[in-house]
Length: 330
Image (tube, rainbow, N blue to C red):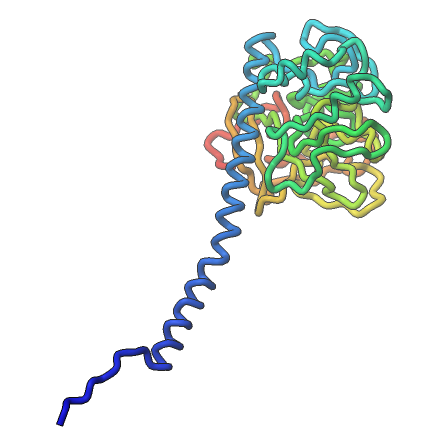
C-alpha cells in the first residue's frame, strides 16, 4: 500500500489569524502617517521662521537697527524719515534682499505707497507669493483680494507689534509697558537696535505665526509686503497689522466683535511657532500663561489705566518691561 502524501496549505483558521494580524498592524500604522506628515510640516514652518529671523539680523548688520513695522513711503531703511498714515511698507518688505529677493525688491518704486487699490506697479508686485511666508499647515490662499486693496500675497507670519490691543506699536500717550513691541510705526521714533532690547534678545518675540481666517469676521488675514499703522475693525484694509499679546494664542472671536484681535495662532496642534530677537525659534504652547486685562475689546485701549499684571505671553512681546525668562521653559 502506497504511503499517503499530506498536502501542505493554510487552514481557514490560520488564514483568518494572518488577516487579523495584518489588519491590526494597518490600524496601528495608519494614524502615524498623518502625524508624521504634520511633524514634517511643523519642521518646515520652523525653518521658514528661522529664515525670517536670520534675515532680520542681516538687516540689522547692514543698518545697525531692525526695520520699522510700518513705513508709509520713502526708502525702507532707518535713514528714511517719511511717515504718513495708511497702508504702507511692512517690515517683511525690508527683508526681501536678505531672503534672496533683491530683484523683486528693486522693482518697487518706494516713492509711492505700496498696497493701495491703484494700477501702480507696486500694487501689481504685491501679488508675488513667497514660499518662505507660507506654513505648509496653513489653509490660506497664496494670493487674496479682500476688496479694500489690490490682490496681494498672503503670509503665515507677522511681526510683533505690542503687548496690548489698540494702536499698533508705539501709541501716543500709551503706557510704555504696553506699547514697546519689537516693530513700531516709524514716526513713533522707535527703531530698535539690539542694544535697545533691554529685556535681552532671548526674552523678546520678534515674529509670530498667524492663522488665516482666525475668526468669522476674517480680520486676521496677513500679507507679506504691506502693513497698516493702526488697528481698526475692517476687512482687508488692516490685514497686514502686526501681532500683539492682548488676546491669548489661537483665540477665536465671535463675528461682530468690535475690536479685532491680532494674536498668534496656527493649525499645528497645541501652539504656534515664534521667532525671537536672538535668532532662535520656539514652538510655544497655546496654554502659556496669559492674564486678562481691563482694556480688552476696547479700541482706545492705550488710554486706559494699568490693570492686572501681565502674563508670560504678553510680557514676551515687550522689549523693555524688565521681564526675563530666567530659566523658565516656554
